[in-house]
Length: 195
Image (cartoon, rainbow, N blue to C red; front, side, top):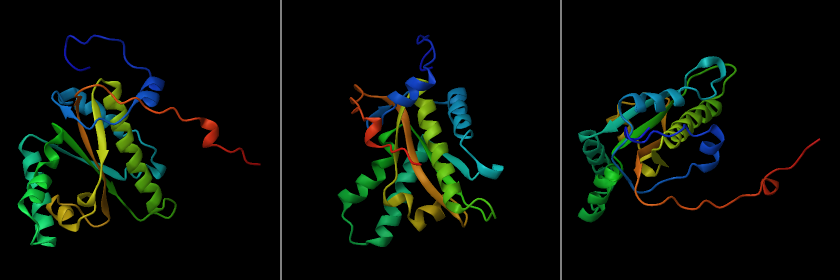
């Protein structure tokens, strides 16, 4: 739970599933210590055919966020040496949008029964599990990608291995302001019964 004074009943699984939404403005406190370990354990519960564990997590906080921003700026400048200072500064500041970032990495492996797409989906489920756990514990977050999630220069700087892919940057912290009102979707608009 966020803060010692916040002694409330745990959120139900259904409340977490139906109520989670993205938060674009995040500040401290972020999940740390046992709370962070709990979020990461939730990610490890992703569906995992053949127990390949096709994911890993890079935790970026504190000065690491500044270093990640420098990586973003360096690879963008290498691609476009004429990039203006304002655009570079914006890239440098992206990791500062939250006090904590978890980079979810898919570790794709050759397997006769588990295709890479299934492993990639498993890593996506791990990311979703982390976001759901954060919401259930009173934190908030947003799953971001963008060009830096697919850039070979970012991959090199993060020490990623061949066959690894970034699934997303999970920006985590405490929501600033009110949560957006989520639209209500009707199940019948998305479901057909077959057979």
